[in-house]
Image (cartoon, rainbow, N blue to C red; front, side, top):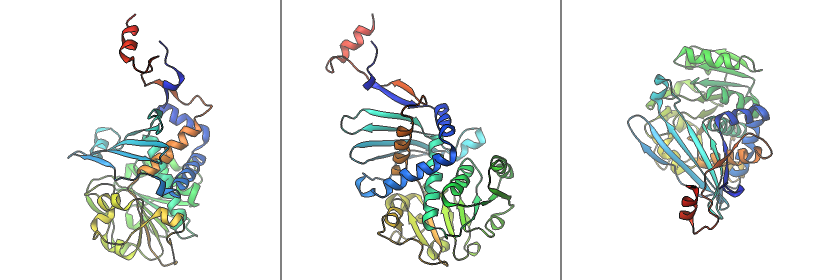
Length: 347
């Protein structure tokens, strides 16, 4: 028995995702994702919101990130295992799903390892465009792992930077990033310390992988007027920014209850004031208010950003061959006769 069209779920494999990115163009895909994220941030109050469901172990964390706008439901499965890199494995892998709330049927299943890197970069750059100094042209990229090229190119495509200064404790990672960015129009400078990397930079991005209370940016390193894009601290016990910097700056987050557990602000008192970024995008709160202000995006990633990315992919694969029709759902002729479908299949 052949499944009906309603029982076939579009599945976007890693190979198809790469084809889709090249078909759209990386810069255009980053801009498109940022547009979808901005649209959903502006209707933030229509979504179900909950901190992600996390299962922690000594080796890392496995998480589910669900949300719904009442019409469509989405979730992402994602892991974070810093030890994987030493074993030749990805630190982060992910897949995601969209479903129709009216009947519960999935409408999209897709890889999200690549897509998460893209949506994380698009979110960073969207927020930097909102909060960073308007003249920002240089970014320090501290941590040159799997996210670094995406972050750099998103900042160029969306926030308008022209220069990126790279640093990682592993020189091989910096060399990798510099090589991958060599074919772009970005000016790339290899640096030998975090202090050197932030010289002349208006945007400071920290993206390190170790699950540790680290201090990548110390208080004396950060002067007035910069925007800090802190994306590496994303689980309990993992930080990058000195508490003194957090107290000097204005802090913006995705979803307070989640970021207070997982973000750099886990180092502060639970009542320390922070602003959710959707409030700035809808005009409910102020963003940057002076040239001297330090703005900090304490980003841990939130399910609505994944929802936006899934929406984007669902829309963009229509009319293309960048997916497999997946026979995922049982589809008996009589919905009450699942057993009959099974027995007829024997013959």
